[in-house]
Image 1 (cartoon, rainbow, N blue to C red):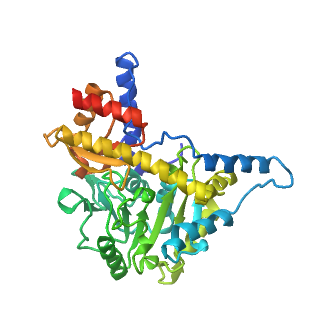
Image 2: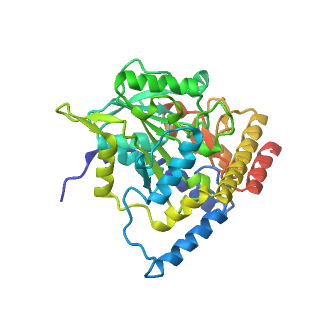
Image 3: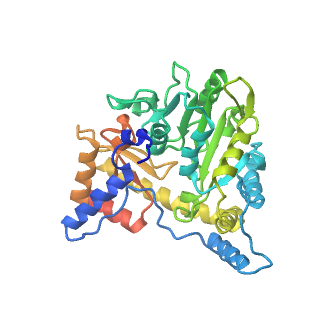
Length: 407
C-alpha cells in the first residue's frame, strides 16, 4: 500500500457542513421526516437569474454548431469575461486592476485552498478566529498548521474577533507571512471600514506579508463606509490577492464560477532570494492543474454585467439581505445578541446563557425545526454562537422566525 498524507489524520472526521447535514437528516428520520427549514448552509434558493439563463442558453446553442463550437478555453478565463470584470468591478469604482490580473475559476472555495501551492510551506499563516473552515483545513492538509493543542493549531497565528473589537481583528504583534481576511465576513456577517483595512495593508507592506482577501460577499454591502474591495486601499495591489465568487450574487452555487485577482505588482522570493511575480506563479499553477471554467458558465457570468444582469443581482441580494434582517431582529426579540445581517446575508447570534454552539443548534432544531451552523465549527472564538443565513425563501424565513417568537 502507498503512503498517504498524514495531515488528513489531523483533520476532524467530518467537514463542518457535512456534520450539520448528518444531524439534520438524523433529526428528520427520528421525527417522521418532518420539514426542517434550512438556515445553515449558504446555498441560494432564488432560481438562476433570467439574464444569466438566457446567456447560458445562447452558449449551449453556440456549442451545438461547428461554426461556433469551442473546446478547451484559456485557463485564465475568456477575455470577454476578464475584461468585463476589470471594467465593471474595478475601473468603474476607480480601481486600476488590469484584465491580465484576473483569473476565472470554478469558484472561490477552490482558489482559496489552491493558492497555497504558490507560497512556501514555511510561511506563517494568520487566520481570523472565527473564520471560514477552508483557510484552516487547507493549512492543515498542506502541513502549515502544526499540531492541534488546546483547541488551536500551534503553527497558525490566530486573529481573534469578538464583540469587543467589532469582529475586526487587531494587528498581530508578530510577523505573519500570509493573512486571510474575509469581509463582509463569513461567519460573523460584519464588514470592515476603509480606515480599519488600511491598517492591515500598511502592516502587510511593512512586513512583506500577503493578504488573501476573500470578498465573496461584496455585492451585499449596503453601507457607504464599508469596503467592497481590498484594492480600495492605496498600495493594496502590492500586497493583496482578492478572491470573489458569483455563487451568492448570481445563483452560481451549482454552476460554479468565480475569479481571483493577482496583481502583477505583487512579488515574492524564491529560496535563493530571487524575486518573482506572483501573477506568473499563479498562471503557471493554473495552466498546469486547471483547464478553466466552462464556456457556458463564463457566458452566464458575463451576463451579470449587462444592465439587466446588474438589476437582477441587486434584486437577489436585496431579497437575501431582507431575510437576514428578519432573522436578526427576530433573534434580538427573544434575547439573543445578533450581529451581521446589514452588509451580509449572515447573522451571527448567541443567547449568552452558557450553552455551547452544538447545544444551541440542537435547541433551535428541536424546538423550532430550523437549522443553523454551530459557531464552534468556525474556530474557538465561535463557541456559544450559531450562524444563520438569509438564503432561504422569504416565506420560510418568516414562518421559522414567527414560530420561534410565538413559542
